[in-house]
Length: 363
Ligand code: OSB
Ligand code: MG
Image: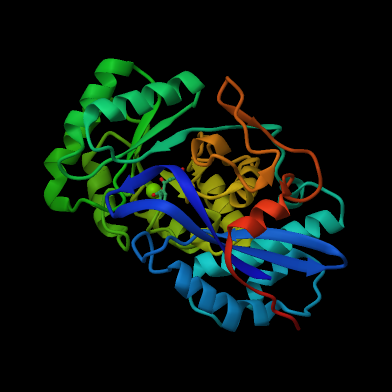
């Protein structure tokens, strides 16, 4: 079953590429043996983060991806990614099907998803991603609240004209809190002087400063910066990471399960980074609790040594679609659930109430 739901964000989220207000996501439910595995398809409404949208994902799920899995048997969910080998890209859409099968399998064997993935932490460190604000005063109020909540990392979205002065003011007001910036590809090498000025703020990293499809210029930029570069948009699979690390394009990688096409590709990416000594953290796509549950599970792997973007449900939603909601302890950690599968119940009544279209697909 594939459905589209609408969820209003508590506050609009703005990046260098656009603004999300009502979040439209697809929820995939994989059924087998009387069990339902759930996963989220977290493409944005428009093709501004990557080329996928809610609409392209609906098409891919309905016409290609779900038909490729319906009625198939498997020994282990790591096989599912191979069933999509004939399909190019469309990573966010394929991730939703693949991850739903992992959840289904973990429940069937009665173990938490994180264990099926090979993870082990009992708590994970979390940070928060803060969108571009209309003015500095309101940004500072937002950041102050998140620091008070206990988040272990504050990520500030930047773009040309909203960078040096913004970060200087945050450092002035909040001192040495662990802080980073995410540019979502808003700069080019012509901006190298501006980007070098960010070095004075002691950021943990700067995420994806240059083009979404570049690693070469990022290598040039990294040589000119003290601040570590973290790649997000330009890493689509483990091989991209191997190449980026080999040429010195980054010192940190953001792993999003959806961006790389699912849990098995995310594990492969994790393993490449771990072997190379490159720290990783789990990125976010403004997911509902369903996607958040998968993010928590993968963050229990050993290479995830930096706080991720998997913030508490209450940072996004008045009422999440899972029970319990994702909550953060005052020390900035999330306690990893011990129940089978994704570890958070999907509340069907809330899901139904937010569903705008659905389709049951059968073998
Ligand atoms: O670049 O990490 C990003 C949200 C949507 C698309 C891209 C990104 C983001 C975020 C928000 O930074 C992370 C989150 O809180 O889920
Ligand atoms: Mg990013």
